[in-house]
Length: 86
Length: 180
Ligand SMILES: [Zn+2]
Image (tube, rainbow over the protein chains, first blue to last red):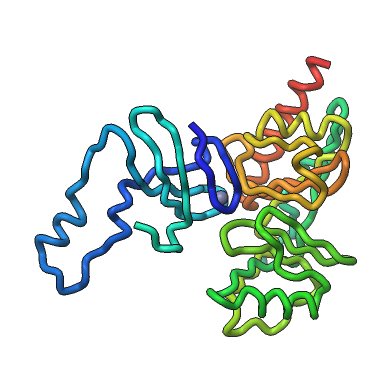
């Protein structure tokens, strides 16, 4: 499996650390209430197919939002997390 | 009184020549990690260039001018080696890194093939030219790999990894030489 770092280009999966689903990018407003935050922290889909998740490129230090497919293992896109895509 | 003796990161380990590759230590006395604040990249680059001749490098690139170098070392960061930094208050986060980095230079016809055993990148000169740099791994260790000549590379790791770096390079070079 190879992932593209927007800085470094296409790299071997061993250079990356997985964090979790990209929902972590969409934090509720501070006054959204306990249940919204509980969902934000704990509720995740488990898709067979297209998914979007967070990876850290260890040697360069960039957080990346990666589009990939859990069935085919195809990696179809990646953007820097700092650009704010959720 | 305890007498402290200054030692370079690879003291007593290098130089060594194995087959067609020579490993030598590059002692990095003064260097700064420069991380421009958002939107200040151009200002930082201009200030650096005015002072040292080298600006802030693009991703995966090294800039050199006379005795100064600036090397891209990760997202939004460069390692700058020069006599002194300009005033960067309000423009960038700056961390002194002199003495904190172990650097080894590989020279010789087997330099490329030695690194090919350790670094998961295509480092052939057709794609990785002089002045190209990459953040990747040497074995399991995060490192900066820079091509500094047709048959020469410089590899940088944290100083605490100096012996591991020398060991990895030595083993790779020995394995390569054994197959020659
Ligand atoms: Zn990267």
